[in-house]
Amino acid sequence: MPLPDNESPAAYAAPAEEFLRVLLRCSQGHISGFTIPLTPAQEELSIKVFDALLSNRKDNRDLHELLWDLVRVRASATESTIHNCPFLAWLALHAYKPDGTYIDSDAFAQLLAKLKYLVKNICMVEAHRRQAEHPQGIIG
Amino acid sequence: MHVCVVVHDEEVTVSFSLPEYTPTQANDGMALILGYCPSIPLTSIKGRVRLDGAVRYLAACETLCPLGVVVHKLLHVLICLACKSCIIPSHMPGHLKEHGFKNIDKIAFTAACERWGIIQLPERVLHPSPRGAPVEILKTYQGYACAVDPTGCSFACTSENWMKQHVRNDHTSHPALMTSCYRSNVPVQTLFRPFHKKYIEVQPALCNVAQDNVLARVLQDFLPTLPLPTITPPQNDKEIDPLLRLMQWHKYMEPYYLDSAKHTSVLALKAPARQTDPAYHRLHTAVQDYIEFGIHIGRTVSPNLTVRKHLVQGRHLSSVPLSVASANTFCFLRTLIMIL
Image (cartoon, rainbow over all chains, first blue to last red; front, side):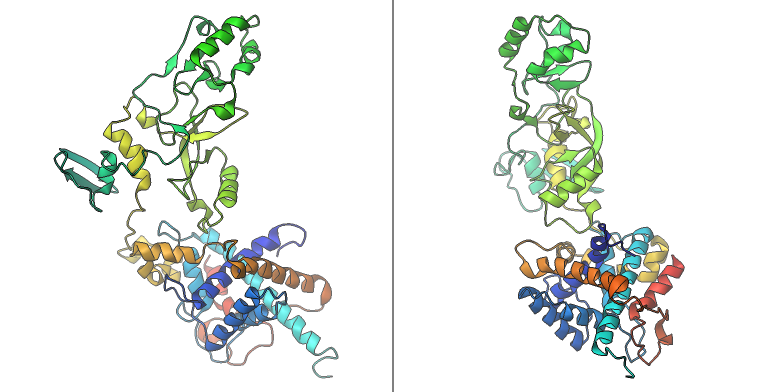
């Protein structure tokens, strides 16, 4: 877990930033033709996030909605594959090095730790948001 | 005339007669070697001096020789033979005291410096062009050379952290993978040290090789301009490591490494945002703020909130969405963490 008083929050944010940058570039149509598989709802949310960034809105609601939709459990029990999971598709690109080889397991383990923390972070924000919606508790 | 060069295990043989030879796209490299492309400069780094490995540039005179000092006739600098380093004239009397020369005839020394045209200020000294013959006598170190812009940037140094700082500061749109931005174990030299250090990549193989020799032209001009070698896909599963076998990245990325144009463009996809691209530039701050917001929630706002991690995989996923406690991402996270 990153410490709040050093540079580790930035280090933990780096993979999330690269993932979102690739996702937004792909959804805007990139010359490489690489795609991140998104559901129609996620595509709409990615457009909202891009518009929010363009208009320099400080509110992180759109960003959170996109991230939450990407990590939450789906109703249909389909298995995640590289062809339908945005994270797995991005991992393939992230792992690809300029010399045509791929990152080693040491680097990959560190990346997974940061991704795991990102998922925990998203869940915390979602829980906080739901708690704020029901200050007296969901069952009253 | 026949010239044969082996590049990336491929033998390139060019046969032509002077002066009817016309460069084409396929043999531009050989044209460059043989000076048939006057529009392409010998070196694109301005303000550098090209050293000829076959020429002896060091000279001495009756004033400097007893002091253990020689002159580099092309760079117009003094070299201390004991330290194997350049010393500026104003520092030389003090420096020589360290070697036991306490009473130096300063008038004769100044006259010798003027006679040889020695440059007084280190910042005015013209440095050798990169990847050329080493400066005689000077020490050679194992260092790092910038690879982001091989024809436009000649930065070299002996510290990996210094090199990373250079890449971050001077090449804002550098490739995402830092280790691909520079070359390691590169022979480098610096004229001055410990102050006014400026490292230059040198090519020890060019010692005693004339500047117009084909070997010199290949090593200094032709090889740095070559594209990356073709990437060949693995023939069978034994050629790939267990992680790659599990993740199957090579199959997903196959269209990109088989086509050099796609290879370049797909790498650009993950390049950092530029200052001129406001949306992607703001993404950096937005994501960092979001992470710090999560940390803030976890530590202060809602101390009673915890995230319960239900690690499940594939077809064993529950059809009922969990409240806030699970994520698809964990499916592959758990599988991989167990394997790693």
